[in-house]
Amino acid sequence: MALYACSKRGSFLAHLPVYDFLAPSLLQAPRASHQIRSLNVTKRCFTAASPSGNQSASPSQPSRTPKSGPGAASNPAPLNKPLTQAQRDFLTSALRVNQAGELAATLIYTAQTPPIVSSHPHLRPLMKHMYEQEATHFSTFNSLMAKHRIRPTAMYPVWTVVASALGWGTAIMGREAAMACTEAVETEIGGHYNGQLRVLLEMAEQMEKDGEDIGGELRVLIDTIRRIRDEELEHLDHAVDNDAKQAVPYELLTGVIRAGCRGAIWVSERV
Image 1: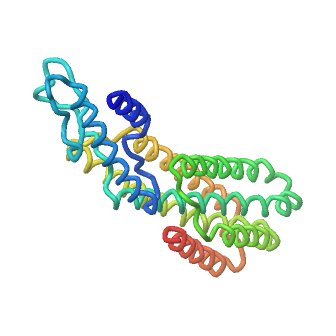
Image 2: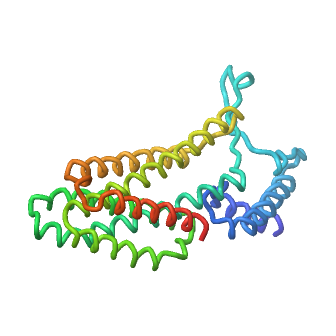
Image 3: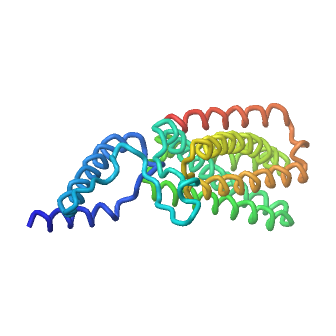
């Protein structure tokens, strides 16, 4: 009976992920504690079921995927090791602020499109194209947030109102002001994504140097942020091509919007 219960627990634990590197830090402590207990239970099950008395590897040691072939001894498989708390905190913060930024972008274009298209019908395809890309970005980060159980920023309702007001206000000022808004926002967002990519690439490089397995999720995240960054910079180019720099007052308008974006990023990363 004891062996059966142990087997059932082992079967349940086999369905748990090895680690959830994007789990919010508030959930990580109890989750880590649960993993430690689970690994101990798994070890006891193995010991009870093995008549030879062989022990599995210590749960405190990172696991390696077994490798077969003549080169197995000289070229061991990469370590399957969870990320550090600092790395998890960075990734949690990054996804939270990225979701907030893409929320704001979709709301800005939603508010800008009716006035702009009404007075400049030829811009309808461009506004539709930029909105659809932002909506796809937003959906991407929504999925990642839900998958890894990360809460949105507490400022979500505030950014909803501010982004809608910014989009409507700049559209009322005219096409040039609306495009200047896009230029300012995308300049800051492009730089923000570049900063995230630098950290992620450095993280991946260090993991490879340490013989650790980067994992498919982290690789996909890097590629996703790189693609989104490129599309945001494409929007910046569209804005400049459509007379963003002709907005009056250009310097004041873009300076205020860029400062607001930097402040929103800083707050969303922390709250």
